[in-house]
Image (cartoon, rainbow over all chains, first blue to last red; front, side, top):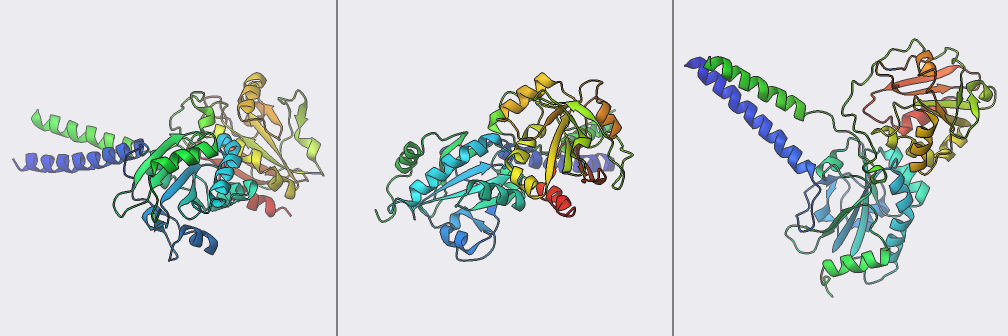
Length: 197
Length: 201
């Protein structure tokens, strides 16, 4: 009887353990879909003051996307080693410049990049190579990449940050977003009326 | 009997847990969707090199995808050389390693260094693979026949006929200065290689 209890206890523990891992695998197995709530991931501290200022962060250190002062956040998951990301970099820059050139959008739509499996050195190399002006963050151990569904690169996620509740994903797709102007119009439509508009 | 079944269940769940904790493979580029053979996780290293820093680098001559043959000794006295062995074309990690080196040519130039990429694949395979990357600036050499002869000379031929994911830094005097026989499932960090090249200055 005692033996049976011990076995049952071990079994319960193991099942819990398995369930936890299976849950984690399920959570990391799929990227957030359009309409989903964006997961509460913690991003590393921006390297430069100008990047903190761009994101509207009032502290030094890791941050959540809910702390970014914007209505909409565009997240690119990339890798310095990904030829598609390399080809797409000028188009992504064009989108960023387009947003900055629009007084009605420049403080409302922000962009960041997450370098899947890339060290700070590799992220810096990618930034310098393509003259990328928005903040890029390293993810050397793939932890953010895993939390966002082990996606192929480049992958773009757009999150609606308006309101104080959950942050809804309004775009989530692998590969090129196509024409930057049309993409910008599309995400502007999907994110609805802007604060103070 | 029922005790035996209980133990069996526990064992099965343990194995399941262990399997679910395996190391994730690096992010794959959308560029290669549907074109990469999944190798799964492999034994990190499956060979043992006798070479060590300070040894003279064994010379070799191999055919390249451009049609010309390339010898290591060609660079004696003029350039440092990074020899990048990757396990096989059209496999994970490898397909995301050389495209990274491809965009940082200036880093190699600043360090007076050329790269030689080597696999045991044949020339047509290597040509198609690197074209999919958009082409690369460095010579891509085929160690296909006699199969893996150069990899064997460098002690990085695996038992399945592929090579290790290995980097050898050879200075202008032809001496090996750095060896990284890397975990085949992971990509070496660029900064480590650049630090090694910096130390040659």
